[in-house]
Length: 185
Image 1 (spheres, one colour):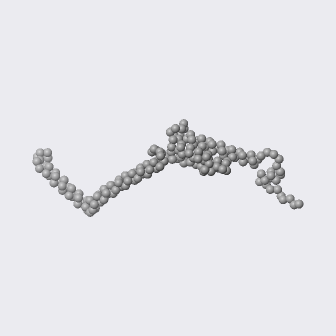
Image 2 (image 1 turned 90 degrees about the vertical axis):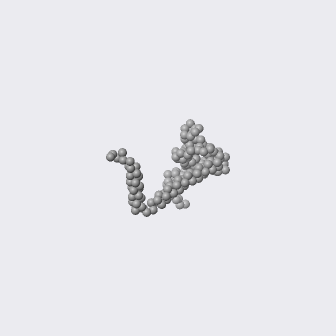
Image 3 (image 1 turned 45 degrees about the vertical axis):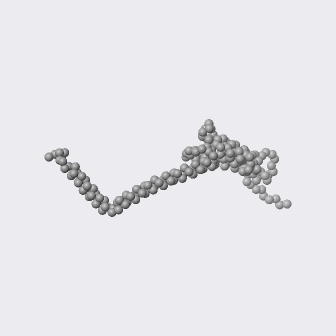
């Protein structure tokens, strides 16, 4: 009789499958006697991890939306290049403010020029890439102005140090780092 024609085949298969399952359960229990509990715990951990992930995402979105609500701006996608650019732009503007302090002793946080420049910096920090001809146009202009201010200051220092006119021997010696001997009267 062929196996396909055997009428008790399904019943034999079912008993062999159940016997196999029983044997596997015995092997599984011998390896880990708390296998069902371990499986349940791992599922609970996965659920708690995914729940934590969603909670973190919800907190992050809430913080970002709160931050943008404080700034009265729409949501902005922050990219790594944007963060790098803003860091270099911030350093450029700090250097620019330092040069302006050296050029004008009355320059401080309350001056109109400081307020104007900081307002321009804040205004272009998001829209610089969208509206400017180049992605770094505003930062480039700030660097250009910084270079102009520092070069002008250095030029004035050099002109003051080496200005023309008649100098005494003591002044000439002091410029080159020498000192004349003291005269005794």
